[in-house]
Image 1 (cartoon, one colour):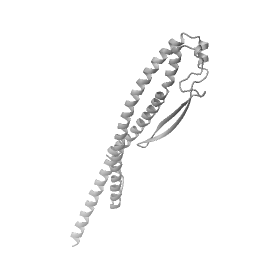
Image 2 (spheres, one colour):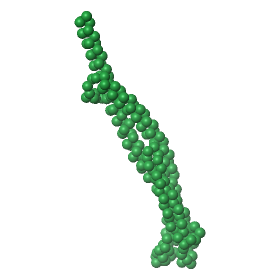
Image 3 (tube, helix red, strand yellow):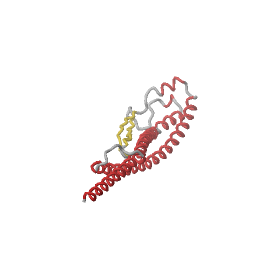
Image 4 (spheres, helix red, strand yellow):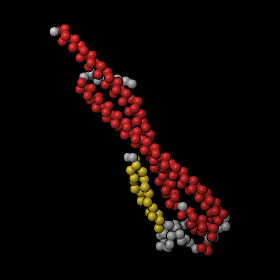
Length: 207
C-alpha cells in the first residue's frame, strides 16, 4: 500500500471517498464479469473438445478411406475428379456480444453450383469407384462441423484474452487502487482530527 500524494483537506477527503466508492463498485462488477466469462469459457471449451474429437476422428477415418480408394485410381483420374468443385459455400459471419466480447457467429449456406440435389457428384460414376464416392460425400458432410469448430475455437481465444484483461483489472483494483485510497482516506481523517483538536486547544487557551 502507498499513500497518495494529496493535501489533507476536506475537499480531497470527499473526492477520495467518491473515488473509493466508484472503485469498490467497479471491482464488484469486474469480478462478476470475470466469473461469468469463466463460466461461459468453460462451457465453450467443453463444446470445443467434443467437436474437436468428433471432427478429428471423422477426418482420420475419411482420409484412410480416401487413401484406399485413391489406390484403385490413377493420379490423373483423381486430379480430374477434384478439378471441379462439388459445392459452393457462402459464409456469412456475424458478431455476438458475450460480456462485451465480440465473438463470431458463422452462418454457412452450401449450394451445388450445378443445381443438382445436395450430395450429388458432378463427375462420372464410371470414372471413380464407390468407395471414392462415399468418402467424398462424407468429407462434404463434415463441413458444418468444421465451421462450428472454427467458430468455437475463435470464441474461446477471444474470451480467454478478455478474462486475462479483466483479471488484471480486478487485481489492480483489489491490491493497489482500493488499499491506496483507503490508506490515504485514513491519513487525511487523522490529520483533520488532529487539526480539530489543536484548534480546540487554542480556543480553550484563549478563553
